[in-house]
Amino acid sequence: MTTPVKVSIIYYSSTGNVHALADAAADTAEKAGAEVRVRRAPELAPEEAIRSNDAWLKNVADTQHIPQATPADVVEADVVLFGTPTRYGNIAAQLKQFIDGLGPNWQRGELADKVYAGFTSTATAHGGQETTLLALYNTIYHFGGIIVPPGYTDPSKFVDGNPYGVSHVSGQGDQPVGDVELTAIDHMVRRAIGVAQQLKAGREALAA
Image (cartoon, rainbow, N blue to C red; front, side, top):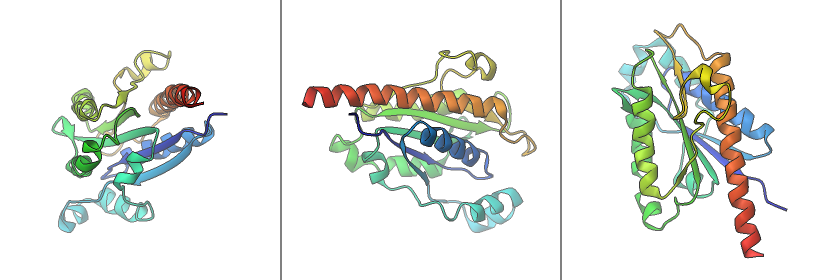
């Protein structure tokens, strides 16, 4: 009998949109029978910047109970889902610093052969969603990870239109995560877990 897939959802969110996607991903993973961890990247922004934005300040307060990510959250997982808002078409510094700190684990080969996928949020429809996900995946190539994007493997992907991962357009904070994004994250998570289950079953069969 294949042991449950272990899923780590590691994200950074300033005003809460990526956090909402992370929560939705965790809900789907739990329903799929996975063991799930949700972890947040440590905040790096100065307090005065956070206090200048009510939504940012509220999200910081609302997510204090979520443990901060550690290297073990990646090493011990079968599936790693990274979430980040876009910063000038790239990964937010908070998540990037966490990933950059995985160097010793990478050197030991502890990040390879896992399933990885990503999700993001931008203020505008063409605000760098695809470049952010592709930049994230550049790192995964170095890990020797197995990138499992959603592609166009489900009719819902022709609605949200992003084959690279899952993305949300937040506007000026007035567009919360909705049904389109929730459907997309549900499909991506189930697909990632399904591939991980096949890999896990194959490894267990070879070891038997």
